[in-house]
Length: 351
Image 1 (cartoon, rainbow, N blue to C red):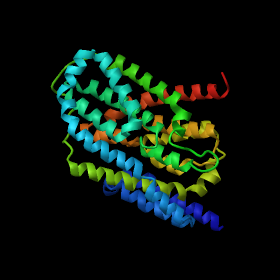
Image 2: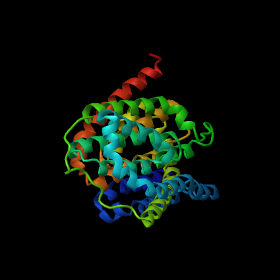
Image 3: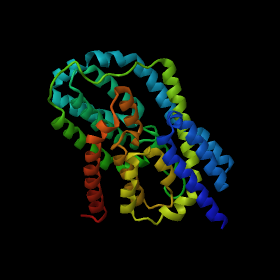
Image 4: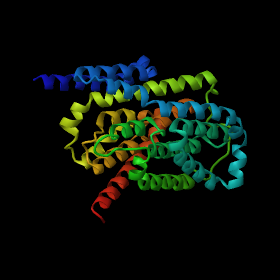
């Protein structure tokens, strides 16, 4: 009965995590602090506090936080060159080649420079172009899908990959820096190239206009430090959430069919995929189940604005509305999920 009390308590916490960020504006604005509170409550209810857990929560966010801070400061010096010359680059390369290169390059680089920095580069590129709104919006959504996929390849790419690597670092997988790369690189690179090709076809040619998407305001050094601090708190919160929900994962998700888990994670369209990864991934899962879980989260995370960090950054800075994003993002995501599901099933069966 005591165990069921823990399950019910964790269920209430998960309900709050799922609902409050979309219904209470203040919580949406201070999401990192909210998740930290929920994570500490989950660990407390589960009676899982330990010195090792506190150490992990303090140390695990350092790599991605330093990457975000360092690349943020470096990028601030070069952002004007991107903004001022992007139209010349597009004309020199040819617009279709430029779109393909942009989507593929940022997708592949996101695991090195972080998804946040890749999204900020995308914002500057789009702000510098003088293409029509619909065309630029299509490029943004396709590139955010690409960034979301590519960032999973290393632990510094995004919080999802940071948490996934940390949770699988012990027995039996001993996940290191290139663990996710070795598992997913073929699926990720193939998807990025496909997104680049789609972009070249759909957004490679169009109308030029001054009425295009534009960044709301330029970042200051203070903004960069604040963002890095929020990333640190966010990852620490995910560490606590991940450990707090171990009881639920072991009780319900371990035995769930990988295909069911893949489609169930379409909820990542409305919830940050890193939060879901923290609550779902367990070293007791098979590698095939982990692969399906992660790919489902990554693809569904591109469908709507709340699904991942690049979406949130680009939509906020370029004033893209939820309905505008969903009109293209949802159909694209559903098609991609179906294709990935079929191909991954065939790969497992050796076909």
